[in-house]
Length: 409
Image (tube, rainbow, N blue to C red; front, side):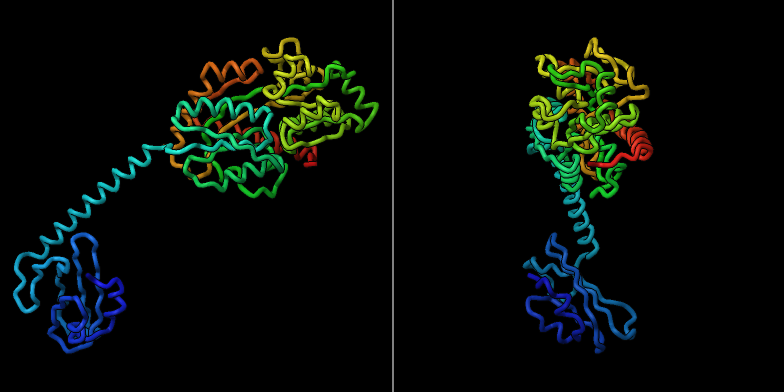
């Protein structure tokens, strides 16, 4: 068996000293000059190839021999070498090609086996909000399509940055995803020092859908219309407050756009998710919220909140009788959206499987029944659709943030 450090052990030895190395068969050189040696040890077949190179160019050619160190029938150095050594090389190369083919089959099988463990879907908000609801409902359907559990993990904070950054830095193997939303397109303009580059750190999986936000108040609120809010805010600057699920979210930017277009001042109260924000709204700690329809639909149906306006340019069929905010505040329009991203570098075939699973889940009767009644328009297209949509949203909100000098609170 060859010593693995034979390269360094033999370097610079003379031919007669090479004979003294243990457990080796060395062919003699017909030269008395000092020589350097390089030994290539190939794992298949125990083949060792010795190259002797004189330090001075006195030899006309190099001697090279193949020694089968693991074969008991090894040739003695003083006997004539029989057979064609190049046939041995051919056989060795054939063995290597066989091994490479087997490795390729094994690699292909490993990729075909995705996923072989649960997939984590990060929600960068606290539990209980619209994004959380969309992720959990969609994740249940994706679990059935993938044959593996899709586990929703809430990582709120810093206007979605904490959870989103965790996914940006995760291994690109398809086992860590993020349910992105409005803030994903706005944060690059609102927070210029993000710990990740939104356009480079992620690979798109699918645009799930788009829908309106809803301006909601408590049932006992004195504000029954959007005009009531404008008049009260004009008369009492900064007295009225509006909640959001965090800086840079659709609720935050909807409030900023509202105050700018209506030329009023209200106080923004950011939370670490829609759940805590709605708790304080229901408890009377804040005046109103431009909440996502998916987050407040059940409260509206139960009579716990009153909808006085939708943020889309036109009225939503899912919220019959609720006017668009733009009817009272011209130019006002905000749209929520939900999309799935994986870390950049995730293999294309893994993205394709995730896209197929997400598409099947979003088109299931269970998912549609949950979200369509709240105004969400399901997209469920190719990854490129999410890329194009978010690029458009980034450009639009970059202009709005700059022109209105919107800052995070």
